[in-house]
Amino acid sequence: MQQSTILRQRHNTFVKIRHFFNARKMLEVDTPLLRTFSVTDPYMRAMQISSSIGTHSGYLQTSPEYAMKELLASGSGDIYQLGKVFRSEESGPHHSEEFTLLEWYRLGFDHHQLMQEIYELMVLLCGPLQRVNLSYQQAFVDYLGVDPFSISLEELKLFTIDKLGELPEKLLFDNYLTLLFSQLIEPEFEKKKITFVHSFPVEQASLAKTEIVDSMHIACRFEVYLQGLEMANGFWELTDAKEQLSRFEKDNEIRKELGYPLVEIDTGLIAALNKGLPECAGVALGFDRLMMVLQNEAQINNVLPMAFTL
Amino acid sequence: MATYSTNDFRPGLKFLIDGEPVAIVENNFVRPGKGQAFAKTKVHFLLTGRIVERTFRSGESYEVADVMETDMEYLYTDGEFWHFMDPSSFEQFAADSKAVGDNAKWLKEQESCMVTLYNNTPISVTPPNFVVQEVVETDPGLKGDTSGSGGKPATLESGAVVRVPLFVQIGEKIKVDTRTNEYVSRAS
Image 1 (cartoon, each protein chain N blue to C red):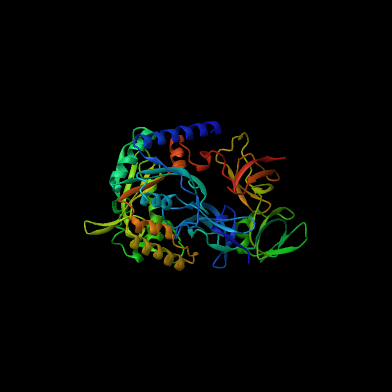
Image 2: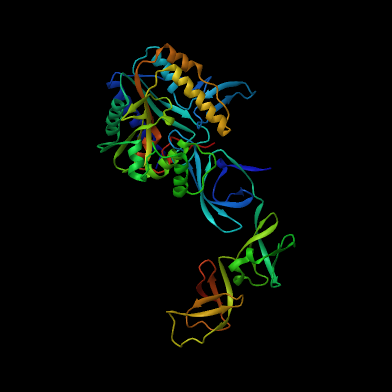
């Protein structure tokens, strides 16, 4: 596709998105991309920024989440942000180390209300879409015939090896689940329908609240799929500072176990949660993946404004 | 010790798994929404020829395998080993039957083929995709057959047996695809 076409389509989509949020009286924000702290998420690799004489000046943000939560805790109200983020060591047909993310937060929403709003936005941008709602557990039962909430680690390991061949040693329970999910379940979702997967295992709660539903402990987290691509990931946001801090510490324990470098916990975010994050739901949507859907492209590189080369 | 990280993975890259040399056939980057990233690959175990699906944790490093592919001239066989020579260094290498395998039937003295060396020892021998050889044995063909329907077996000077059209006669040179074992054309 011609660069001018790509630029035009990106522009049109930017305009529609801004119009959508503006009509909902939401505030567009542009938080700093270069910040002192990064994320403890064991599997995220933030880019560390140094000057040419080696002075360390911080990390490029992997998402604007923490900065936006600080704004929310300071009373910003509903906010959205459309901008670049950076994730090192991620490149492939669906991944680019620099990409554009749309992230927004809705006060007083839970994750179900936010999923409805995402659906409305996606219909606006992509045209009529049939919607499928599926719990994480149901997805595993339907597509693989196993229950991720009752299977043992050993059974899960053997099942995964049987399906996917030889695997690295010492994988964690949720490593098997995410691998199975991405390799064997995601590709099965109907491409023309938009699929909302909700109620994740608590090990994958990240920054989401957890709740007990039908005597199962689940994370109030969801992911959105369209045309075989993961489009968005959202939470009914955890507001409990103590719980969040303990999850960050747990992240670092996992990092230690896997031999990954430890990451200093973002005290700014914890302070914001202590100050009081209003009850809210938030989501991050990959803008370039959206462009892949709109332009029917299989490679993210083909929808970027310029070829990304490093 | 030179290493490759999974970020370097691409088809053809050669490294060691548990001391065994492998080559990547296919590589895909897998990064679930909020989970461990993986390199999902097909790897070719060079010593055994096995091709297996294997998933690596992203970011892990593996020792580079000292594997080289070199065009060499086939010299002769003493029954136990097949002897090759690197035409630029004149260094000679002896490959055993495990390394040569079924490809022995294509080897013709003084012709070149690709020898894969691991730690300076031949582990596989690959003939050129197409070779031209003389037919040394075949049944006399029927007159008038030009289409090659059905065909007949013919033995080539290196020992390979391929199906050829009925009009091909002893002493003629033919071009053969060594990957499929198929006759391509007469060669003059």
